[in-house]
Image (cartoon, rainbow, N blue to C red; front, top):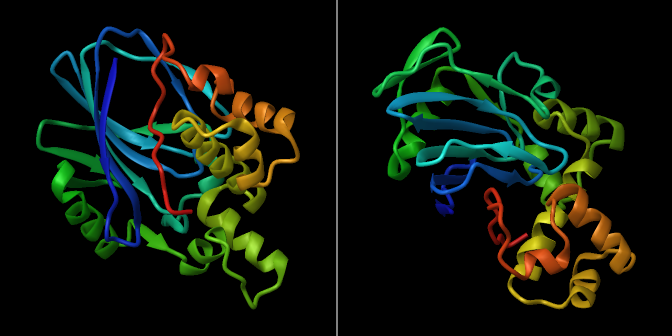
Length: 233
């Protein structure tokens, strides 16, 4: 069983803050995501942490039972300075040192964040020049038009996210579809709302990015799913 609590953030650098507890399960389905995250977890009393990049397809992840985790999901356009974000895609980097109070990132010690005040850490990372933000990327991913040429926009999106605009669009659409189907919206209606060609197109998208069929999303599955949440997008 996976129990997850999550909340939005008033920081433009943050998309979501979450914490979770898993018990009685040995693995979970990690759904595709176009955002990168800072994750802290505790297993057998040992605190660990790291950076997890965007995931371009669903995968099965082995998980320790009775473990707790906490994460800051960063917004589109937020990136780690002087780090090629493409290298983080479908990958992760663990922090070299983590204790109950601090973790080491970019050669400096930072206080471990809490669910209710994660933005304090984010503000410090911004002030320290560790993370930066390109507002144009956030705008175009949200669907706004840009006065720049398509190639310039794509270069900036790729630099900040490690992904193409189309990849982000496909991943985010599949996540929205999974939420709608889980709420009981008929597949035909989901196809219409989100602009899929037809139901087979929706089915292929769900299988690739969510790791579930529409039928499986409507009923309880053996393996829990990683974080899915409804947005205003």
